[in-house]
Length: 351
Image (cartoon, rainbow, N blue to C red):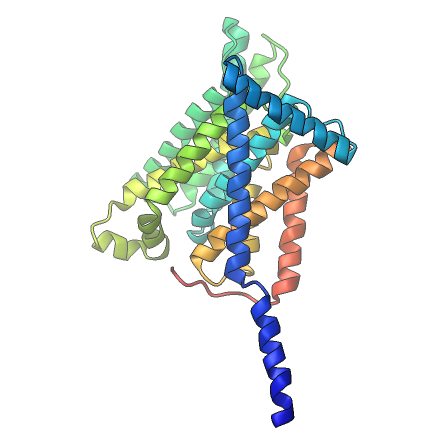
């Protein structure tokens, strides 16, 4: 027995040298936050590059991009539009799993698909207005307005009708897509409409204004979720108790759906309307295979979402494939790997 003690101590020492799960998760979140700050810095400096100090700092970004191209043998990072696309992707990799974690645990995953179809109607409205009036209407702005109105309509129908919970969602999903299809068909008579990039996602779709809008929306979404974390958590796991506690459940439900609409509109630039809901669900499903609590699910979902974005961008750029499909395929690959690693299902604790 005495001879076994050193071996046990050695095992304990080796275990002590290994980083804990929490350390790895916090490191992943820290790296993601740093990456987001770097991308926010680029968006801001690109906007303010006409000023002397900002111009010098922006030049440093360009120099770093050229260095990365020289190191990796690519011709990507020296171009500002690629930085805008990557920045948008990084923001999507944060806010989509962040909001999606609440949706998945409330069994509302279908709402993301519904609002994506509503955003499609908004894109169609933007194209039609531009074609009929000649005014270069901001497509993302029209999509955002229509998606938010659709989110409010879904919530109103859920609160004021006696149908089952998913019926208003199904009606809005099919109805908005039908309206979008009719508007696109009608608008072709006024202007040439290329809807394919918005349907399947493309790095070329991301404009300067789109990247800037996504940056602002992402900061707002993160701030709102952080400020309402406890209330959202309470409603997610026990809505009836939240009502008894006199929490304004209707308000928070509406807020969650509106945040989802905001995320969907920003994410459709790189994911496409058809695939945008995947980033609300797949990283969260991956995280639930490994997480032991809701908070850990939140952290892991953001980390896995970021890995899917980076991996998908790499595949898209290297193979010349649509960014949306590439990101989703990588996300599914990570999900399958998580299933293989976990080999079990986890019961979540509400903390």
